[in-house]
Amino acid sequence: MDLVKELVSKLGIDSEQAKGGAGMILGLVKDKLGAGEFAKVKEAIPEADQLAEEAPEAGGGLLGAVGGLTSALGAGGVGDLAKLAGGFQKLGLDADMVGKFVPVILDLVKSKGGDGVGKIVAAVLGGKD
Image: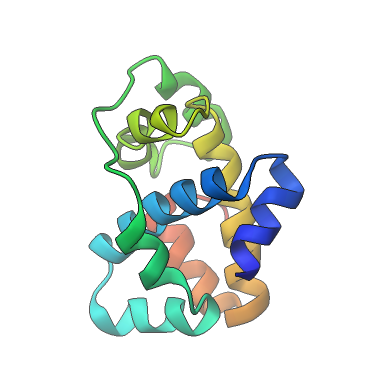
């Protein structure tokens, strides 16, 4: 799984944390996009569906995470991504790690799927395209 390897390498986390965090974020992307747009994401990240299905429950958002997410992401996707903070905590990751996952996922989507797919995902996650 290219995405999991990329997250482990760039963020210094273990593969289970990478799978869980990526799955929660990709699950959010899947929920926000129509089937046609998510199919483009799956072309870029073939394991996207599997990761999303195997992800732990996101859990309630930690309000204290919002400040760190705001600085990492801008205002766009903060509300939805803040909801993931509880799930990240279950993985042994700080809430601010949500904001560190997003650019890695966006970079991989753009490199594998092109700028068009990158913009679709960036729109959901509130990242810069």
